[in-house]
Amino acid sequence: MTSKEWRQLTLLLVAVALMALIPLGDDGYWLSICISIVMFTALATSWSIFSGPTHYISLASAAFFGIGSYVTALGFESLSLWVLVPIAGVMGALIAALIGLATLRLSGVYFVIFTLGLAELIRQITTWVQNASGQKGFYVLTDVTESQLYWALLGLCLFVFLLGGLIERSRLGFAVRIIGDDEAVARHVGINTALTKVILFMVPGAVAAMVGAILAPRYVYIEPSLAFAPILSFQVVIMALLGGTGRLWGPLVGVVPFTFLWEFLSSTFPNQTTLLLGVAFLVIVFVLPQGFIGLFASIKRRMNGGRA
Amino acid sequence: MDILITGILLGGTYALIAMGLNLQYGVARIMNLANGEMLVAGGFAAFWFYVNQALSPLLTWVLVAPVAFLLNWLIYQIILRPLVKRAKNRGMLERDSILATFGLSFIGVGVMLASFGGDYFSYSFAATPVVIFGDTFGLNRVLSFVAAVILCGAVYLWMHFTRIGMAMRALAVEPRSAGLVGIKVSKLAAIAFALGGTITAVGGSLISTYLTLDASTGVVFTLKALIIVIMGGVGDIRGTIIAALMLGIIETLVASLIDPGLTLAAAYLLFILILLFRPQGLFGRVRS
Image 1 (cartoon, rainbow over the protein chains, first blue to last red):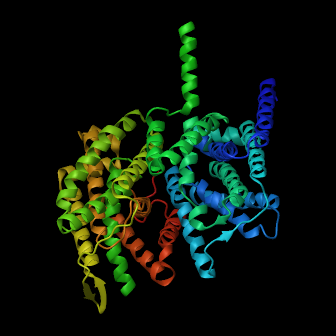
Image 2: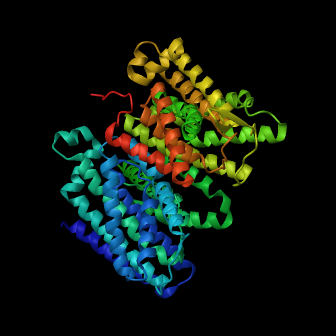
Image 3: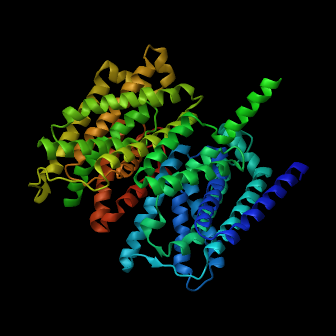
């Protein structure tokens, strides 16, 4: 590792350690905001590990999140939550691999379309299975506190950042950057493009499922339309793109302001949140195609240019 | 037999909607994910005119079509044209247009929620039974089917027997060369996009006579239309019609034999099979 990487690692650990102190100071409103922020940081960062370099817009987050919360809902009576979370991760990764094998061999459009309806598809099937067994939903009653959930999510975030850093340094990360630049070139230099994409897609799948598993106790009652709410996928996409997917910490820059904006809007104008999502998409396309980090970079460049 | 006919009746309207999307994606190269919202808006218009003005949904298209055409033309010129211009390659345009039309789709839902509320809306139009081959069907379904067939036929003839239709097909096959033979690509793409939106909106008016819609159902129709377009092959009208009928039949089959809540699952089953075995579409040829 270079000295720059050591510095980044230290910075990350210090930040996580500071964030871990928050529940000691406040366990009401601010903690719940911080849970949202940490949750979306894990989701958006893992999303951009796959979608950043490949440019494939994945809308599968809600589906994996739902799968994860169902793992907890079905298993919490016999197993501890801390065992269920890794199980959810493995499930998420396996399902992501299956979806990837079916769609990622082809052009990216098919993948987008497929993931667009994935949450709805799994919701329909789950509802059907539950109707057949006569159950509408599950109560998830545990003695896990908000603070513990927060720490678990924070730990997951740390894991995502470390994993992202590792992938970036690895042959896999190098391969996927080439695929993103030009897939034909990637194939010609001997990269197994389909396999690379499938492996990377397993990352957001596993992370979203783990987030869902961790947060299930917070919902208390789990039912299909709640667990598989498709809006989550769109929030993740917007936050990640708003921040910028070119750097590992990019999505974080989008998550923090958007969470506050969302919190504010959904409490003052609860009916206008869809409108906000729509406007956010247009802003991303027309004003911030590279996200906030792209904006910072161009400001920095302009200032340097002015000096020279 | 009952299922087969219901499926074909449903498939007819699907064909119309998917044809609209196919013009937008196949000719104008815009992956329009706000397509379903246009459909719901068409349905809302039919509903409003029927309830407030007692105007038959079979006639509202005269009003819906020009408005939808203008609206879609403006959307293309103002929002999508800049994206087409700045795109360096097809992939970039696809990504940008997906994000932009997501935005439009959410704005559409938001506006419709604000103006009509989140309730389901339905009305009773031509709900008299018709007997076909010994089974009874709602007259509204049959009428919608006939209207869809006439419109699909008209679009097909227009695409194949007029100059502008031929230019459209040229654009669908090879956008770059189309410019070389004197086709005004940007003008024509705008017309194709507007026409596609119009067809979808009219399809929405028709479908609202027998299906219950609400402000946020649009995305389900977008998905179905996308699946049909992929199944039938991008830019291929004949394939679209057959794929739409297949989807209509399979959906009805699943809904009546297993569970009416599983219609999207049925569509996905078809989608996966197509992706695995014929990703180029039913009649598509593998591109080199």
